[in-house]
Amino acid sequence: MDQNFPTILLVEDDQALQTVLETALSDEGFEVVTASSGTAGMEALAAGEKQFQAEVTDILLGKGPQGWEHRPSCSRSHPRHSGDLYDR
Image (cartoon, rainbow, N blue to C red; front, side, top):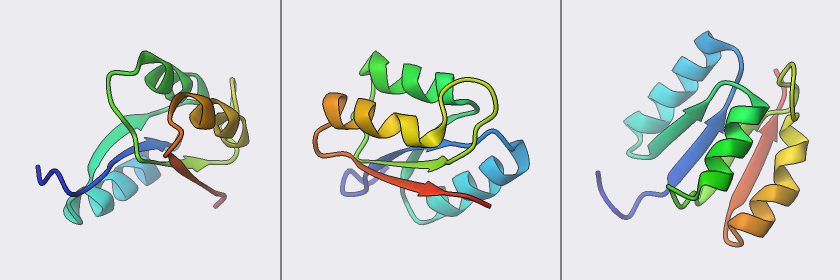
């Protein structure tokens, strides 16, 4: 993996859409870590195993934290982190 490309956290509860987005981002050279729920996304951020430069998250994620709830956590744990919210 080219170190010049950021690592992105992708949080999407729709498996088909997650696969499409992961493939598109990976094809462009990004390292993509996926989470299938808001809770799993928050756990990935808190674990600190990866330094995420960006997060792409659905706004409505079913049970658990919603996409907009990731923003404060991202800012605290990853100050240079950029987050993008989307709704389908």
